[in-house]
Image 1 (tube, rainbow over the protein chains, first blue to last red):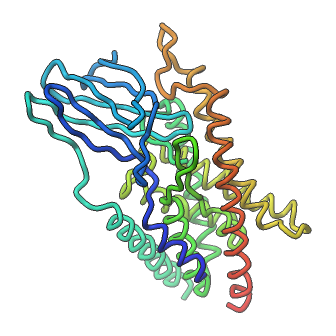
Image 2: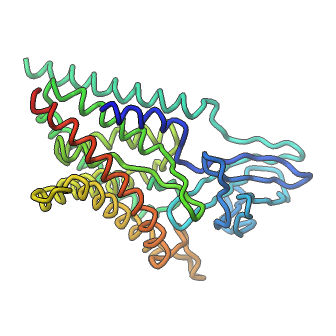
Image 3: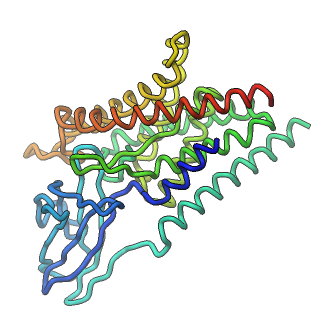
Length: 137
Length: 211
């Protein structure tokens, strides 16, 4: 069990999902996709949609640094979908309005969420034990 | 192996939801029957371990990352239904808190890891239990089987769901790409999973006998 706990503690340094950062270059938007260890999500297929439309505004593959660059032609919400053959991927929704850029993003750090998840998980088992014990008495 | 939203067609994930919810209700009934006070800390700790292992990204050559499952130790020590019940909670928390996997693809991930992974680990152990490395093999092979299940499920999408022009509506890559893309990295994951399963089962099975 000690081995497992040590492994679990070290594993906090990692995470699994594809992460992203967004910046603005003139009238264009740059979305950079990367794994939590910092390695780029390179050469993966992506699609950019204006919200509500079924035909993509732009398609292509991310560059060597995992970047997707597109230049919105109107204000509103945009959706960037990127995915790889092995099932990794992400969807980023952002609002472009002139020079302004608003992004849907979480405010809680991932490691805090991981700890919260562990707490909730152990709490669920505690409650389940109380529930089962009630009926066995 | 956590498939995000948008990869799977509603024609697939809606029936999968029905199936997964049915299995979840059944698994909680089995969990309630198997629940003994002394075992609770072990089941809870292994579920917590699976929660962490499922969030560990190990970068591998080829520009991708993989993670372990943690389902085999629970299936071998407490049975496949208990493993399925634990994973219904673990995967739900991973979706809600960490955004790993999607809400629509939750049942797909649950069936791949909880059902295919858990039950195959259990049955592989039953088949190989006379061999020295039966525990390692069950961890290794159950990981590969989960990966194959997921690669086939995603790989059939471009054949089944496309618009009139032939463009895939959901996951765009065919079986010829998904099977090697899933299987090759999961050979490594399976090896690590086999070792972890061996360590966990070896340490805990002795203690559980004394509980």
